[in-house]
Image 1: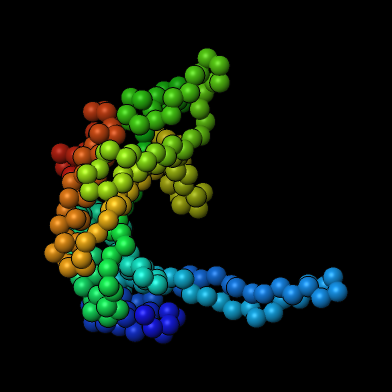
Image 2: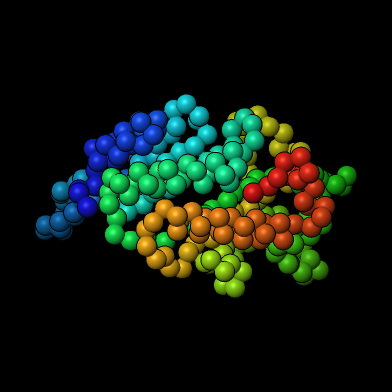
Length: 245
């Protein structure tokens, strides 16, 4: 692979969908050497090392590419309207993947990953409390009689047998909105749930194999996501009006 730097990343982005993606942020780290001479440290050879470039679709504003050494990430986010959905995610990621292969010519795929994030609110009861178990099947169990009420939490698990196409993991935590957001922070308990499915191995680099894995991974993640909610919790998403993926 040629030397990884900003110029190489910009060259690739100019080929993606006829330059539709433009750089939005550069993420890197600083490396330096510290020499100790007569008890006095001296910093030498400081340099900035590029790790990742994030680019945004200048027209749609709801999709991003992240590019690193041997790394390609395609993000679709919800802006003002509904989330674009899995079909759009698959088309966008496969298009970028094919262009990545044509440009960088990788020999193999180390891993493929599908990651979904959902943020939602559970309404407070009249007494200002909320019973999480009424809405979620995945929550921390804390003995209230000895430890009292839970004010904040984060739960993370890796599920070795839940996904046939790879390792399934999830996390659920309280999601705090910034005060500058302008939203009503007292409207309910806001939670964030992340689901992640990572392939254990991958044979070949053909796009059809990647597409097949993405489709299977999506089905498994959708099933796991639904199983994390009670019937009452599922109604928070109004699934009869907007399918949740």
